[in-house]
Length: 143
Image 1: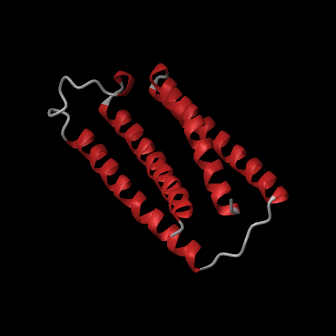
Image 2: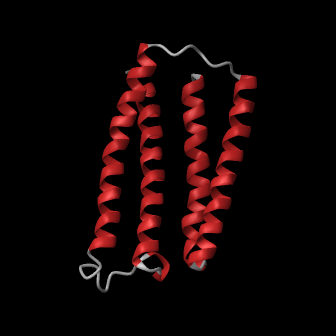
C-alpha cells in the first residue's frame, strides 16, 4: 500500500470511531453542552490525526505526488461534492421548512436549528468519508 492509501485509511478510521461516538452521544447534551462536546471531539480528531500521521511518516516515507495521485484526489473530491450538496440541502430544509417536518423526530429532540447544525456536521464527516473511501477504491482499482 502507498503512503496515501494508508494515510487515507487511517483518517477514515479515526473519523468513523470518533464521530461515531459523537453522534451516538449527542442527544444526551443540552445545546450549550453540545458545543463543548463537539469542540472536544474536534480536538481529539486533530490530536489523533497528527499522532498517527507522524507515526506513519516515520515508518513509511511518503512518495512523490504524480499525475495518477492528482487524478484520484480529484475524483474523490468530485464524489464527496455530491454528498456535501445533498447534506446542505437537508440542513436548509430542516431550518426553513419546520412545518414540513412536523412529527419527524429530530436528533435527540433538539430544536430545528441545533439539529440542522448536527446535520451539517454529519454532512461534512460524510463527505470526507466518501472522499476517503473513493480514494481507496480508486487506488485499489488501479485508476
